[in-house]
Image: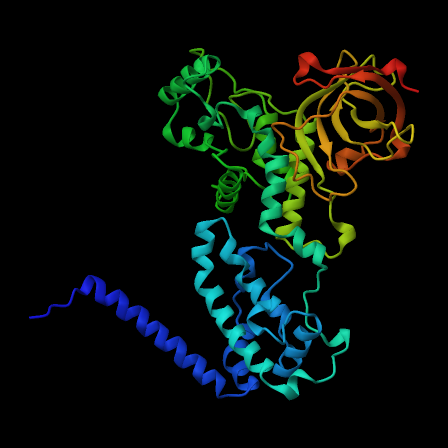
Length: 465
């Protein structure tokens, strides 16, 4: 007797059934007008209170509904006139390509979550676009006026700025690149047992696990193995912050985020037996690691700049291109130091130092800075800071720069100093100081740009003119 192997037969039958259903739907769509397909398959998307699959790749500024009008004819003309429909090859239409962008998402979890919605949207639009393109009378209708067309209210640059991939790239440069300030407590995956320099840190982490409760140790694991995983962790943990604690990311007031406040807090007080009290995540905040971040230094600036940008993106605050931040820097390990700062510069005053390169062809200094840093005047009247390298004019984002290898070539450089004498950065921490804050400039004739504070390039404040 012939026996059926159901382990093989059932999947085959299921695929066949799905293929048959899809074929039947396609045949049904081919026998109805574009308006009927639109009313039956596109309008449910338009009327749905749920966001479209656009949210898989965009945090704000765009939704598939933005491209739909209540009329099938006007929706088609609107998309056609914006070159989002290919009349000769409907399956290659740009609107379909945009819907399918989620297929390329590197976040497998996100792909799975939105797969059903994305598939339904694609099949509905594909059927409707094909029906429209097969209607010769519809194809040849005159164009709509620009005012009649359906499109997102935000400019394309604003939409691109809200893409998750751009946000993650910015997070990696502005926050992830600063993670070693938190080594090893918040970066346990960075510990290398084979590295002799890590042995003391490994021993201390082992001691922490013996002294402190598991829930506190779990809270230490802020930085994960990748920027994507770290950002996802920060976002998820910030959604449900326990009472009395400070959210890791405070989107209403970024300056009050735990990610910033904790490393700027002092160690807890000692108990009678000499041991430390438990660090506090809220109220009178304390940090077992002590001061790791100083307000208005270069790391503080990059972190809060990213936080403010992220909050604006997810809350849909950007309405025009002019409102977008430059976000054109990447961290390096190069250090610039200004010594002998003017006695008029009060200790604690923020100072920004911009680095300009020499153009041998024009025999002049480049107008745009190639790097900058920010620090505060120390009691010894110095300003120290790790450089952020800036993208050149031809690039809006320094994606080609790796913070682990970012450097500058040897040569002549001009250092321009700007002093925040009127508290601009207290109000706008991510701001760049303007000409009214210019304090002078000085040349470094042969900068070598080596890594670390011990090998910092130095310029004297007395040389500023």
